[in-house]
Length: 255
Image (tube, rainbow, N blue to C red; front, side, top):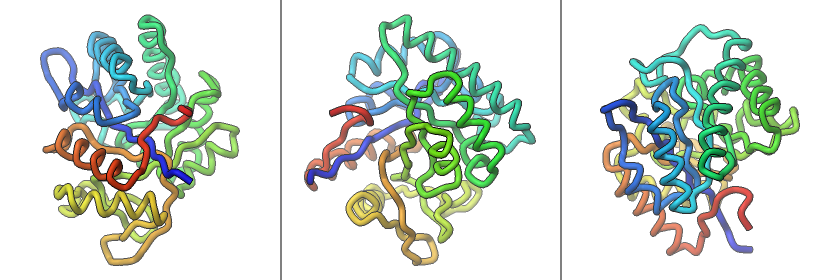
């Protein structure tokens, strides 16, 4: 059986005259784009341009809704109720779906951003709110959730198609959670270390935690952060390594 993986990247995270990431350079290496929807980053023009560029590259479109926190880039925890989380998800997914429709395309998936994503991993009512918002807007959308997490289970129980997500440039803890960004060992900066982690997650279904313990993971989609230093090199190196191992890169839902 041929192994395959979806390779996703967060994009469209600039706004106004401020630019974030190298989207056009990364697009040829990935199969799915998680596009910011204006709350943690992005603006209407950036959303349209990013959608258009992704379509031109044959990359699947996904909404990347976050907390309403431009200054903190959506990476600061907020005391948000499940009802409020539901509302901001619906508005952001709907906005990007409209942008996609204006360009003759449809969304394929939804992935919450930053703190909203991480908070939902260990907060069942919040995870239920995020999943319900996706289900109510368009139940055909694929819900991205941290591999082997409660968030994935909640969305699956609701009836959503869930893609369990692993990370190429983040380290893990023994409970399967990502190492907090406040720690100096949260990010992987060496492409070769990243490649080794990626290949183990895809081929063996395991990832080595920072304390040396092997943690089981299901890898449906692999994330590379577009705002990380050297992101273009990371994306290219990982894509080449996957090709060398005869692992196909394709968006979820593609034949």
